Amino acid sequence: MKNKSYFEKGEANAWFQRNKQALEQNASDAPTTLLIEWLQPFMRDIDTALEIGCGTGHRVHQIAQGLGAKASGVEPSKEAVTYISETFPEIIAKVGFGDDIPFSGAFDLVHLGFFLYLVDRKDYLRCVSEADRLLRPGGFLSIVDFDTPKPYSNPYAHQDGLYSHKHDNAAVFVASGLYTVINKYQFSHSAFHFDKDINERVSLTLLYKETEIFGG
Image 1 (spheres, rainbow, N blue to C red):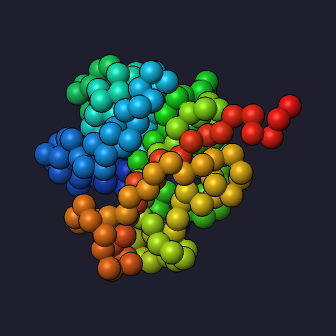
Image 2 (image 1 turned 90 degrees about the horizontal axis):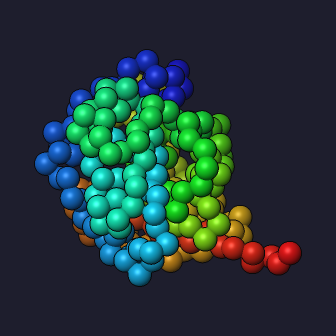
């Protein structure tokens, strides 16, 4: 079974139920606070924000409040989307996966909210393409995810036969020649500082989507 199939068959809702209370208790989390701080000089340029993998909606709500933007979110859990519509009715939330996002148009900020490590590798570049499709030139892309100096996979803790995939997710955007890294902060999955344990390393990366850098 692939990761996506497993999440479609119930793991998305199970993840939501396992993590809902912790996300509610940490409604203003440190990485999101740092992201808002980084984006303060560009507030006038950010009217719309989309989080892919938005969970309970608390992160994108915090982003929208901090930047004065309209918030949207995509999440594979139907229960999570129902929760968001009841808790944050101002957020436009839809059920979907990162490789086929049910939004059109272009956003000023696209935030990849800690889900890429669960994407099947055959779908990974489609997720990258979808994020790029939804971000306007001159917009900002932010990524929170596991971050390691070399790619590797290890077993997913909640299901035998599935894997988590860890590497530097910003690298593929930079390699396109269309994105520039503005800021990056590396920390631990369990604390907001660097972790010597490679399995626990996470990063928040902010990128800028360049405009007309090739002329024409």
